[in-house]
Amino acid sequence: MRAAGRTGTVGALVQSNFGGVLRVLGVPMPAEELVPAADRAEPPGNSCMIVVATDVPLDARQLGRVARRAVFAMARVGASFSGTSGDYAIGFTTSDQQPIPDGEIDPVFAAVLDAVEEALLNSLFTAVTTTGVGGRTSHAASHRAVLERLTAAGRLIPESPAETR
Image 1: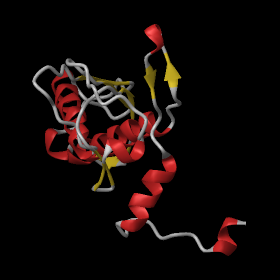
Image 2: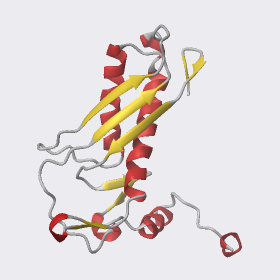
Image 3: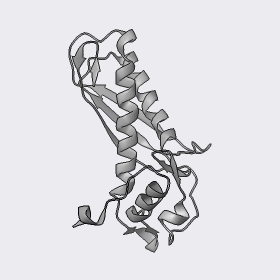
């Protein structure tokens, strides 16, 4: 990413726990299709925690703006932002340089949205089915079902048989 005439990096780490209908590349992914065996009871108070890191020089006020954009990225993946949700984000920079001008921060905001969206999707698609306290099981999403829905919606081009060998 380039901002204020310099190259910068933005990264995101998420603890994803939010409700809504998942969207990938704009395609709805209903839970009953991705995780047919899942318990549909959604406990109240789901919250997503997001950490955004960058090497772009930003001041505390700009980092606050970056953190707010990080929460906005949840909408891209279908977060419902329910009334009991306590979603929040923090941001930090590793730079000790003078902050970039506010008028040149838009590429940072765009990179934050992309990084957080990717981190949210990665958190879902790298998850494994887990059984925890009291025998409660959290099921991983089916990668195959996601790929099938994306292909059916024309968002992915299916591989030819020769490419899969």
